[in-house]
Image (tube, rainbow over all chains, first blue to last red; front, side, top):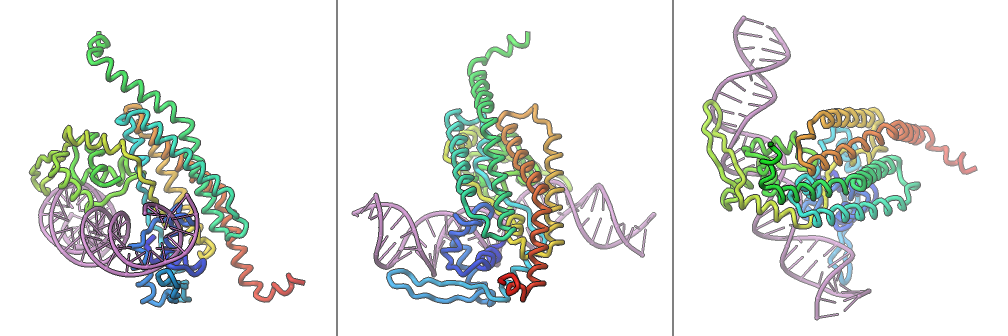
Length: 190
Length: 190
DNA sequence: TCTCTATATGGCAGTTCGATATAGGTGACG
DNA sequence: CGTCACCTATATCGAACTGCCATATAGAGA
């Protein structure tokens, strides 16, 4: 989703500063499916402000940089609503982890094992935190999306736990085979 | 994964042109977890070429633009190997679909239903094609990653099928409640 | 004293996206 | 049945966008 729409979405749930919008994408409810940096959020907010889709109230704070709190305007809500009617672009995923497992046979087994274990404990933590979060007060769309994310993470954890040892064994035996049998093919061919 | 490493990864499996690398990210085995455009692939290949991590053989074709076929060099393989030892960056996901379901209560139910159904049939097709692909000939890392992707897609399909009707009902009843009861809260408060 | 949190801005490098060139194949429409 | 529009294959370029890092500031915690 383009960053302007993302900002409108966050602001539709309540006023926020640019910094808080970033936090919502990093740790908040959007963190599982959206990604945006300061370098895209601040310009997006400036444009939205120029288009009158959001209002900006400057709060001078002592001891801190001025805080600019943005609120969505009625036309901003309309714009968000209309964007939601458009067909969604396909998901974009960029995963170093998948890339690494794809080339697992190029990796030392101990490095690979450590990466797999880190992934499992990381996602187990994510699932724990997601289970604890209070869903009752949230609208059905948020509950649904939350559940979908949980289903994903659980499926990943289950798969990793069930298949990780087999993968490590296969790679270990392949690598030792490479090392042991530089001349063995002749024997095998007999 | 940065685009240079992605190109090295693709080329480690066999020679390819820039166009073919793009195809590998779009439809090929990398399509589930990597995303790169021409504008990043061609500059990346040029840099890899300058660093002698890949060789480039110009193939003049009749009736078509010259094809530049790249091959990974031994130092390219070493560079790929070393990158695989580095800790992976966290996954980056950008999903319009999740964004939309998150704001499901802002959407008309028929639009929402259509998006959910399209998603299901799309991923059912993906799963079918993945089941049919010949895994036996592929290295264990590829099989593992393939299975992990399948597990994800299946979990998503299952969740969507099981929860979609409930979501649509909740939204429909919420929207009709909004329309019907502008004065009802008084009654409810009695 | 360092580093973290909170908050915003600026710039550079990297990326995306769209245009351009070329030419044969494929499908639709009259 | 002809023709035009669009798709595939292939590469390059430039404009706009984005990400990432540095900078500024100051209180809080280690």
